[in-house]
Length: 526
Image (cartoon, rainbow, N blue to C red; front, side, top):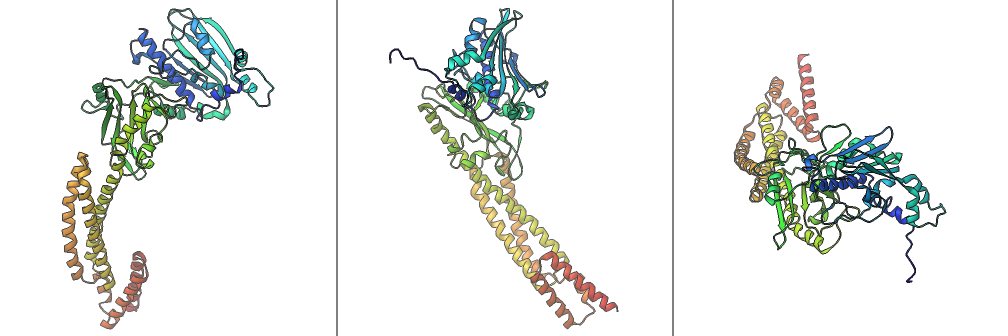
């Protein structure tokens, strides 16, 4: 055993590329997060003044089926470039400081293109390093029916080439090109899909003109961040020829399962360690909660580390009392503890003690506070609907009474309708009174007060209508049409109308009664 060295088989490369990710679009996240690290290093080195001076560019060419992602970060010096871009799973980055630290994310593009080309230079050098991975050849060698007993190192030597080219001494950058993207992964070339993906996952800024809760000087996200002494770590990412950078998709309104709704305010929460160090903080939007959020770009409370989304809109579902309640919210959790470490896939965090503590502390908000909000608002919205419906129904009865009734059955139906309205008003009022103590939304508090005043007026109107229904006379149009007939004939006609009303719906009944009156009118004229 002492002289035996382990041999790493070639199929381990498949696990690190094709087998690593389920969504091809993760290539954008992997290369963007490496670009942000390079921009931060350029700032630390004094090459860039701040993050606003940093720029990440994504160029997608459908015709040539190529993707080029570049940044103006620090770049790699020639002496380190080859080993950095040649070795696998080996990185000088520290997990507690950088977003990409495992040394495998740069291989993400191997699965989706024929060639993966890296080009980089750093300030002060007159050369750029170009390292090319032959993805097509790699896939041929990884075919199960391909006879190959070489180990992983030998395979990499055969598919990677290296060269240097002259470069301007002041240039500093890193570029990765996915040459000839496989047709199976057309989504990688779809600008709308890229924009939608990075607006959720990438460390992009809020758009203040569409989401003013970011920049609000009194209670905005920016003010909250300043209060905490932190940064949102936002970067400018440009897609193709659009002069505007990508933004998060948050706006002041949302599409719900029932209707459009407005974000009326945002609320914050934060947790600290016993040492006083910030553990995490979060924000969530308060709306009327008419239904669950349907906007895919912003649905659900989402967790971020270094402002890059970890997991997706469903990752925090288990932390709510019911999974579905997360879909009623929009918001973010920003994690700062260095020991909460994204896993290799970035679909969750490493399951260590710190992550378990994070979930335990977060449940104080997700289960004990947020999970209760949809039910409270659902009840109050249901109560508002009952009151609004009751108002409309009372108005309908008033209109009917102006025209009179055609029969005692119709009068009886009005009594039943009025009793149902009275019951709805009472139930709506009780639901509002029961829920109002749990509502803090100032706009909603005022609406509750106004609605309770309105219920008193509706209760009074309902009581008055009871007497009006008793006193209402028969329809003047019907009475006039039958006035020339004897009392016995009128009784028969009214009895026929009662049968019609009992057997037909309201619309059909009315049409039938009109038809009978018209026929009687024709008969009389003869």
